[in-house]
Amino acid sequence: MTNPKTLRPHTIVILAMSLDGKIADRSRSPARFGSKRDRDRLEAQIAQADAVLFGAGTLRAYHTTLPITNPQLLIQRHQQGKPPQPIHIVCSASGNLDPDWRFFSQPLPRWLLTTPENAPRWQNSDGFAAIATANLPFDWQTILKQLLSSGVQRLAILGGGQLISALLAQNLIDEWCLTLCPLLLGGENAPTPASGVGFLAQNAPSLRLISAETIENEIFLHYQV
Image (cartoon, rainbow, N blue to C red; front, top):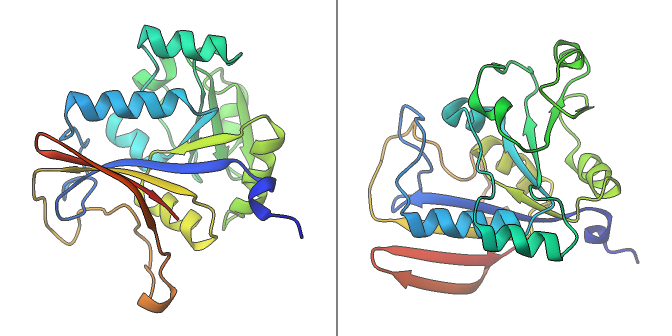
């Protein structure tokens, strides 16, 4: 029997969250509550990936993404025969993104995943090196299979909660790397790592703890689904 995981990239969610499980505050402003150590770990995880995937809401909050700047990580990618930066893929059904955001001037390859109806607004622009289209609701199994055929073997997922929830619902997430940060955000409108309709307890994805490391006030958790 064919293992379905061989038909798609290996996927890993990388997030920092508050003690009460929020990845942003109630106004969904950029989540910058992680330490420099957390940021360094995020960059190291991105350096291992062939591509990074995030939703339009995440890009709208930050207007930017995280390129690899650590010289050792850049050397490591070069020795592995990889380009300096992984592909940064934005998932936006509407395609409603501002070309003046800093993201569009960062020196890294950018791809867009959108619907056929909203792709034309970017087709005559140099904002994205490639544009992939799919009808709603997105069939992520097919999309990930196409990414694998494009050379993406390891995919880092940086949010947001709606995107992660959609991938979870299709059983397409392999690992979680979570940084538990020492603050409480609260609020029913503050996003969590997996938004959407949620899961009933008997159907909820189960995780196996691979490692847990406490450094100062942060806890770094690594789980396998």
